[in-house]
Figure (cartoon, rainbow, N blue to C red):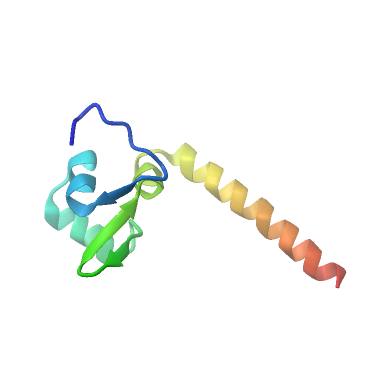
Length: 84
């Protein structure tokens, strides 16, 4: 993976690619996965990580935007349910 590569939110990365992007050791990535600090999906015996998860770790602004979007959606759902 080239150091100039941009982390794309909807791209899928391997553990190795994520490790290179974050510049951390393999054991650190494993610890992050185990403790849920980074969310991943297991495909077969390997993990796959969405770019948005990597961005969430390195950019609090991205996480704040995601939280705002989630809370707005949750409010709409709750309002709709309460009307029933």
